[in-house]
Image 1 (cartoon, rainbow over the protein chains, first blue to last red):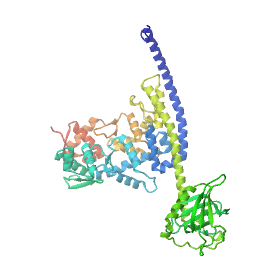
Image 2: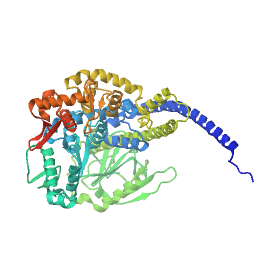
Image 3: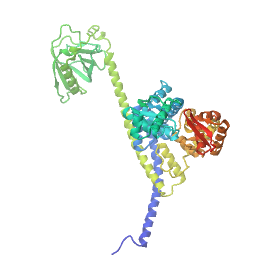
Image 4: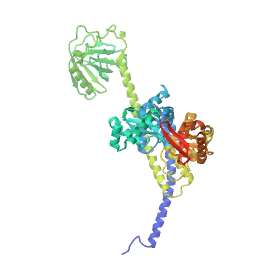
Length: 241
Length: 376
């Protein structure tokens, strides 16, 4: 019987085929880049047309913005990645969110001495709207969250913690650690939490539980040197000593 | 048709609009009336009809006039109709378009359809007879019965219609926008897939893609907002855009950095730069990518990203921190910040760094964190 695929001849043939395939691959990749460049031009003019008709919708309509963002992320496109991107340049989405980013940073910075770098999304929303004035475009909480997500790349501790059905926006690094977050989330279940509950659910010692609560209180109220209080609240959650 | 009276089309208090339909022609019995194109409005109390061309021509009839009504199906060349049989004319009826009629029924011809819904609503109203429980105030007697003396029928009915039209227009705009957007997304998706195929080929090092072509490819990705899968392997060669940006930033930040003790958090830089620009703002990622081109990007302890002058090295920072603390005996982050003209956050970072290196130790008390020279 004649066994195929074995022997020096067959191996040489295989190598030749591979080389040819690689060569083809080479041409294909280069061709693809050219092809992409052409498609890009077409896409750019399509986007321009779209912008000339519908740019206003994006500016005025926050629901439309949500849909737009979700469509983009479904296909794997981030319209906010760069100010040099088409989406940003032609639709103006970029400037809208980047400016919002600046406003968010400024609000957080201004209040940090008072709230230790933790602010509720509601309050942030309220203050940003106030800062923008009554003739500015409307800004929704979804808009804020997307802007904050972008700010994260720059470090500085920007993040959002789900609490009490909404979010706390954090703008200082590391002061809110895992312990704090876990206690916040525990409190979210019933709307309040006590030291004994923390001890029971998380199996912590009393000192640790108290320490975290004191810290949280300091962060929220900005007071230093307050050893203990009987209760305090964050958002809609209450904490009992 | 002699049951109708002239009306100004204004709804009374307690009277609500139930449904309206365009393209209605009126029939006096079996005869076509001159009122051949208008909007029929059904309210809780009345049947109103307004001429589509001449808005001042508006007539109304109380629903209590209706005995019963029936549908007449459409035929070839004939629209569907609703035939409404009526009681005799009441004695105190206001003047209307017809002084007298030999018929005691009228027809509504639905030239633009809508008869099914209209019929349904009419049935509802005639069953509920809401006009009996919530009497509307008497219609203000309008001027004479002649065609010229009527008040304009703009009022609530008119305004409601304008709002409805505006809403439909807005809805139309939005749904058109969505349609166009979907088409656009389909094309964008094609490009994403194409770019993935190219990126894979580059990763597998198939063929000779020149450096130039790679840079071009990256700029395409940047334009489209597609994540760059290639940079995870190739460092440093950002697009031309980022390199340009880096140069600009270098020039722009020299003075501010010096004013702030040689260091600025990226978020500070972001705000400074974008406020200065006003338009065509930088994205956070643009800033980070441009900074990567600098060598002077530093990532200190707790995930704060800073831009720093090259004249500052880590050792220098630590030794100067130690000096300052020894000088004063002890310092808190705030005091240190004041001393150096740094932000509190960054001064804290510096002190913590020195602590980590073993040069300082801390006392965490109720008054806050205080740094001391480490004598151990």
